[in-house]
Length: 260
Image 1 (cartoon, helix red, strand yellow):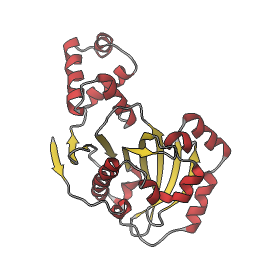
Image 2 (spheres, helix red, strand yellow):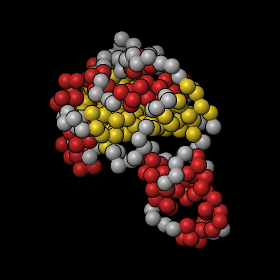
Image 3 (cartoon, rainbow, N blue to C red):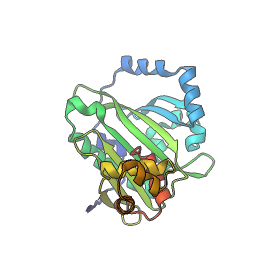
Image 4 (tube, rainbow, N blue to C red):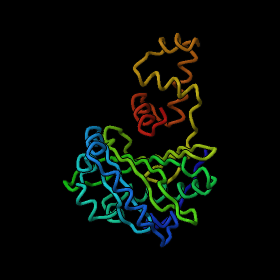
């Protein structure tokens, strides 16, 4: 397990993405074709938000779903705010943590071959103050929508959800995929220490999925044809690797990060 402490001032987070001055109005216009009634209704039912945004222009290209319920800000207000002002409403500890997470994301992006950048996914969480003054924990999943000719991110596609039910006070997480090596990073907001957590094995993820479906250890043992003590050992490993003591919260986190 590796731990690293970063000293970083809270300048604009989008600087980590090395934006360029280029943009494609033709491509941007095509994104608005996504704005159809059926997609918007599905997102509202699932209580998800879908956002297209540019780290270059610091603008939202598209906002879909019931964002008022997700993050406490209406689509109209978010459109006026733009990504930079949106960040100003993060709880201060989450903003500092997000700066650190963005640094990891940028480093990770540089490790991905250009022809595989479409596989990049970054899932992370932060606390946000809504227009009603309430604090919500938000999960955001980023993928790359388009790159410019210099292979810099031009547009991101983000899915956001409210995960206030996940109790991880004082912690933030980042799960990165797309490179040959996945990464799971935890930030201690009190110390600003970033720790790379050990990833779960295929067997541990399999057992976690069964646990997430409500199966008991005895049932998992029988299904996988392994000793009950082996199941217990895997369960202990899952908690130890995630640095957690509560099984339910560990499963919540794994589901939030889409690891199971």
